[in-house]
Image 1 (cartoon, rainbow, N blue to C red):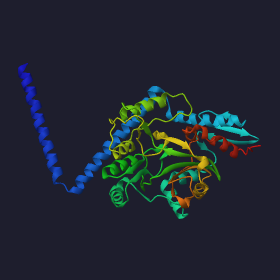
Image 2 (image 1 turned 30 degrees about the horizontal axis):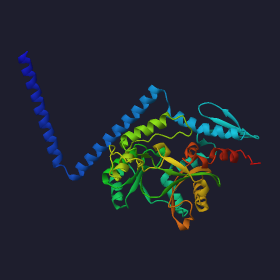
Image 3 (image 1 turned 45 degrees about the vertical axis):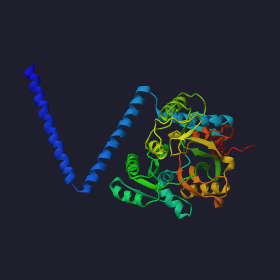
Image 4 (image 1 turned 180 degrees about the vertical axis):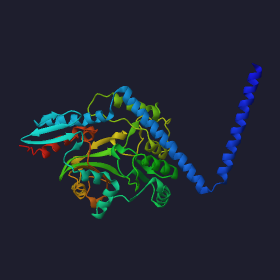
Length: 398
């Protein structure tokens, strides 16, 4: 027995020495490589580690869905449809549920089909145009509408993207050129090379092309428009937590998310997501998850203003200046869109454009109705779904 243990120990020692020598040789080889090759190897390592974590997260989400039986897409679809059905009841509109989320609305010989926030109004090309954030920016710029400066790159063009970042005014926003619904893959307020690299790699998981865009500080406004009519406007506020004087940021987020998930009230807010934007926002404030905010202290934990990322909204329809309504209507028309959500960033939405400033950030052809009913100032909420149905079905106020 002792002889066996001694032999086994000798064997393990021998294996350790061999592996150690191999490791030393690898290190020596790496040292002899040029700096460009070493940097490239390091970048590849970071990318594959992030991609591995991305796949693990997707796998975990799939398992959660399978085990719980809860389909998040179906849940979101249900929320959107409930808002539309409630609005239809108030207007005596007949609603036919065709299953799998497809609703038909009939009134006075007219009809329209809607599935959540997808309508039959737009053409296929309208969706393609609006879904391409860089193309939208180019079209609006050609028509002299204000947009943020931006460029796009592929993963193979990372070095060019990095050089563009170095020459750009900081901070910047990194996002997929297409497929940014729900704020996925977007990282705002990027200032360091490390943040840039991680944010760029994250965006490539959602689209082949990655946009590097000038970050604009200001009010984030979502304008919901049908043709030349403003249905609702909300100010989008990034996710935050309120301190109680004893709980850490980590604990406050758990408490907030638990309350939101278990809430039976209407409207129901989405949980705060933990991602690259979350960590960058905390780092910008020199905060950690263990920090304990003072009682009633508001700590913003996200920079991306999106309800699906845990943000909230405030109804501002009655205070929007006509200049911004006109600007939003024009932007939709130039992009061949009839019904859409126009995202603006401005200094003050209530003032004339000449007395403040503003840019058009994005256009969305499948804007959420439900998101406009989540406003914290519930007494001011506009019935956006009701206005939409009245216009589409030609229902007069009399």
